[in-house]
Image (cartoon, rainbow, N blue to C red):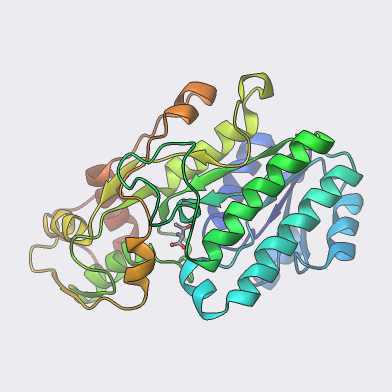
Length: 324
Ligand code: AKB
């Protein structure tokens, strides 16, 4: 991995993964690809960066040739909630973006590809507690359908053409730098901003909706660990179960109340409740632990404290008694 192209570099994960990659592999070896949101002009001037739509194979391939890329990380995707509002757009972006990634990787004989999958590959017929790695994949969302298809396509390109594709079934990712957009687990980020700003959150999921989650620091750690894993140790490729914690909105609200005692929450479930109800409550990630040594660092308590410190700094609203 000498030159890495990160597609979706300005998104929730991309905006924190790219600085971590630069630190590890060198500033000049990470190329930021973005479409929307754009990179701020002053950054675009000094970064190694390129703007293209992941569906545009000519521009995508040209960027790989121009920058002598040997590894692609494709984070561009329409997530679960937005995907239900615009299913064909989700199919087009997620599937054609993936096919372009795989075709380019095969044609240019790239060293490695990373494309995230998601807990959205699971559906109502999957065991919901401690969901195994190899189990029933019958999702009921368009996002989930694109992610199952993506895993199958990835495994096909690996078996047929030897493309070294790797992927993690990301749970809900919680972070303070860039807001997520269009997902069902987004409540677990929004709640922190609303708690710090208004001491009130109107949650779009029911109080007892348990979902698997992960703090961004663990997401970056898992991504880099899998990217660097010895291929000889991998029995799975495009869809590793990985998790760090599972909690409900009520449990998260109670943790926030330890620092903001007058924080209040109401529950008004919308269409996203049905999506959450079709997903697992907890995940068995023993294959990731065995095959590449996965181990999370953050639980609910540690993540909540770091999130509140970061958001209160960002919004410049102090929380009494809370410092780093
Ligand atoms: C979503 O909620 O759609 C995503 C995901 C679990 O992949 N955060």
